[in-house]
Length: 424
Image (tube, rainbow, N blue to C red; front, side):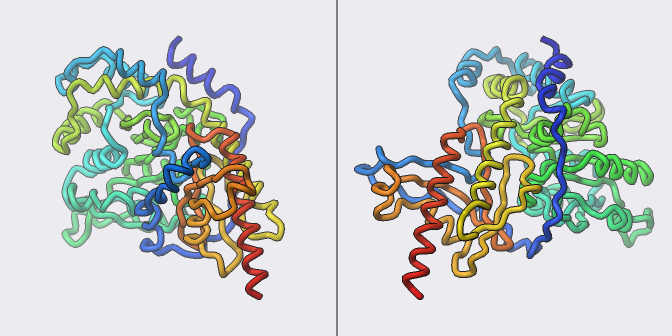
């Protein structure tokens, strides 16, 4: 089956889906507050004697997915060669599949999303001291260690990230430098967008917004790079092929190891000359791999067979969000219009129950829980910023797992409210 036919078939079932609008304001923007969830660990084991009666529902991230039997078999049987020499047939095939699916001239297999974004910045911003414009809550700006400055010598200026993951276009235009070659200023080279937007809860960037960003970039001779780690989630949510989204960007980075289920790998795609320079940067950063077809085989399966099932993750996230709203008395605040993909952010309305305490209660098996529920349930989530909690659905979480998470949430809420009444 051709990649073009595949693209149409994968997305034909989603053509009636529409992106929705999110209007709820954020209560905080401080970078220090959004660092926490990457440092939270798994809870302690509940003990060998209880393990058989304890179910774990891991909603920390879609990075915790594990390859299934078919993917492991594909990896074991992969035809390989030396990819640094361009001779690994499985890597080469993966790169062609990705380029065609994304509507780009070429693609490059890269070990990680962070490296992929860094390579994109290095290629677009060809001289040290060049400048990129990024959202202040973007993954590239907050969670990638400032690698663009640290390793590439590229300066970043920020625009305010809005609740739906977009930013104000007038503010964007005001950030573009016009003084080059005045020695006082950096030179604007690049605009970066993130789709879906991680910190803002998996928000899908509207297509008109992307079109307008591209128009601004074209007006001033800048490039547009998309951190599209979860762009396949965006495509499924909007009911369009990824190429429809990516026609508004020059380059994109797409992660294979999140909702698509591969154990490792990211695709960087763009024009042929861009990928040629990206290949050199990948080598300089230590990303040149040899018999990489073993992991590229997993990536092929991700792109060809795992995209359609992302809708199940979106549905499960919405199911849990609705259950939060139905909690009586109301303990949680959720904007259902903002639950567009597999990432859910919700707030706790009770001031005496912090996100950290709620997550701790969800992750531990309380005394009497097994009797009340018939089993112990550990639900792993992260406290987030703005008095919120973050939960992410993925291929390792079934509808039945989601119902278990709802059962545990209801139990935790009930126990907390009973304790509060006893304390009054």
